[in-house]
Length: 630
Ligand code: 3PY
Ligand code: ZN
Image (cartoon, rainbow, N blue to C red):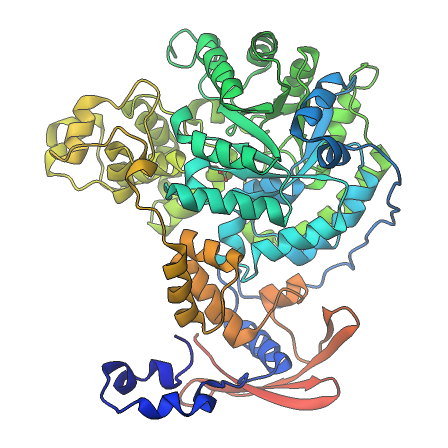
């Protein structure tokens, strides 16, 4: 409840008043908008100017170059993977991909690239500015990965914008390009298993809003955990891309769990489960060049569906590895536009193009257009410098610690947060040891987070493996660790190490069935009533799904909306740093409606910390008051 109106009044709620007059006084429920859009936006700017933005260093607002958006024209009458899907369905796309003489490319710039380099912080504004141009200039792409993974949560939580709106707007801007999302199977776009009907409704709505390709993986490679999501995606008539998560080293005889036979068996099972495409999801970038050759050629001989390879370039071996995969017959590879590629992100699209020069399977892409798009991203990336991971060069330690690309920088932040910044080397080493302690598991969101939590916990408390086995019964393990060993994320390959499981669960019985069988079906009608009472308007299906997945985050987002309105149209430097005195900006809040805002003065803080911030707003003086929290 954000407004202190009659429905929130404690006496009213207690029933201390005779409330029958309400029935005959309908006007009581007519709540006027408290403040207009402009005042709300000024409040946001004033607030960020005075109090800063989370995780952004307080400093003079940097001056950036004006963004240059390349000119483009939409190709007409071109056959793309998207036109085939819309006209002939997913099986036709699958056949078309296999028939392509050239290697196809997925552009991950709009999702995994910035998830892995910039903590997923790129805002819709900067994505939407270049969506049409990317689609126009790169019509030979298989797809653009634009949604899912961490983008959903981060949009609401940190960027205070609606991820559904981002997707729908992109859809309008790029009608002839396949849009791909990363779906964590029963974990949807979250970190825990949800009720089956939440997964089903979420997938349906994602398809309605613009997703064409559902890349579905389970964080323990547990196929049983993927089936509900696969079935839901098949129902939508979109493309089901089921993923094998790759870990370890195929050619290392000491890693007996994840052998070529293991992957071949899983590939066949995913094809039988209904996949139109098979993904090899190398989330940490562990797939080495000679391993990929063997993996791709043997999988090609095992399944009839096309193979889509995803990797991260942490080790610096990405392009060499992709070249080997292409020679072995892989159908599609994931790359990012140059300026957002490399390191923990995907290999560089342009580099791959040149690496394959002279090869008959060289990807067909407009190289000069890629360079222009890359220049745009080079400039945009500067806005988000506060979210860079600090990794300056390729790092082959990833072959030891096996951390996913998207986790590396995150865990480093988490380590700093709990005072282990100086002991980062120990944390990395412990991450690898925890993996072995847990029985050598697949590590990808959310299982990777559990391994990270345990590694931090052990370093922080100076625990080693021996201490866990000797004194573990007296140790309270992190919640996420207890949840994993209780079976709430599903079952790992080969089961849990039993002695450790007993120590962690302390006599509590684990579950071995699919968590979705035990999670009660969500009553969406009741949920709608509950949400409506919170946000004081009728929720949309999209609001409802956001609330089902992230109740607290979504309510906080709505609260920000009621205070500041829609701030997604602000330019990113202003969004992150506010304004400097005498600066003037223009904000296009809708097509043809532009606000001109100039910051005139920042008043002294009063005894209660309040400051008057004075603007010129479309030529008129406006003052807003904000509390200085510093
Ligand atoms: C995610 O789940 O967000 C990932 O990118 C996993 O690799
Ligand atoms: Zn990835």
